[in-house]
Image 1 (cartoon, rainbow, N blue to C red):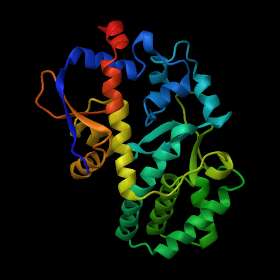
Image 2: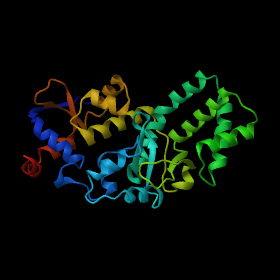
Image 3: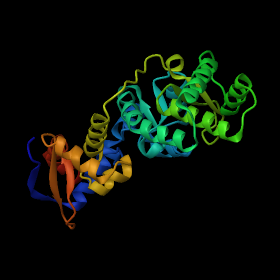
Image 4: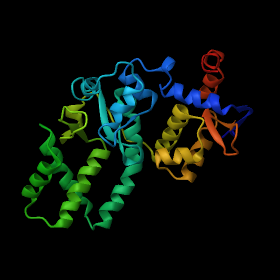
Length: 289
C-alpha cells in the first residue's frame, strides 16, 4: 500500500469556501439544473425533518417547485428516502442509492443484532416476525400501526417486550432496504407514513450485500470526494464511523486521497486527487477568485 501524498501548496481558505459552495450548488453560477443533479452533488439530501429537503432544493435549483421532488419520489419512482448517514433520513437518486444503503446495511446489522439481544429476542423469532411483516406489505403499503396490529393478531396476544421486537424488526427491514418509506401526504410539511415492500415499489432499485470494510471505505471516499477538503472530525460527524475506521479507510485509499494544507489551521485535511484538480482548475479560480 502506498503512502498518502502531501500537497506542497497551501490552499486559500476563501477560495476553499467558494469551491465547496460551488460543489454543493449554492453559488448562482453553479446551481443545479434539476433536483436529481442537486441530490447527487450532495450525495444524498438530508430529510430528517419534513421541510428540510425542500428548503435545501429551493436554494440550489432555480425555479424549484415542491411538486418536483414529490414526483421523483412517488410518481416516477426514481428517488427514494432511506435511513443512512447517522441513521437519519436521506433522499437518493437511483444512480447512487444502491451503493449508499448497501454500505449502511453492512454497518447497521451488528448494531441491530445487539439491540435484539439487549431485549432478549430470539433471532428465529425475529426472522419469523420479519417474514410476517413482508407478507403483509408485499401487495400494498401499510402504516406502522397497521403492521404492528396485524403481526400481533397473527401471533396472538403479545407483551410490551414483543412490541419492541416488532418495532426492531421493522427498523431492520427498513435499514436493510426491504421496507421503504412512503409519505402519502401531498403537503410538503406534513406526514402520513406508510411502509411498502421495496422490490414492489422500486423495482429498478437493486441493493446488495457488501463487506463491512469495503462499505466503510466507500463511505469515506464518497464524503471526501463530495465535500473535501475535510478533516477526520468532519468525516466522523457525517458518517458515524470511528476515527480508527476512518484513518484505516484513508490509508486504503492512498492512491485516490491526498493530504492538503488549509490556510489558517494546523488540522490535517483531505481531498481526492480529482477534487484537488478541480479546485486548481484555472477557469474555476477565475470565476470565483
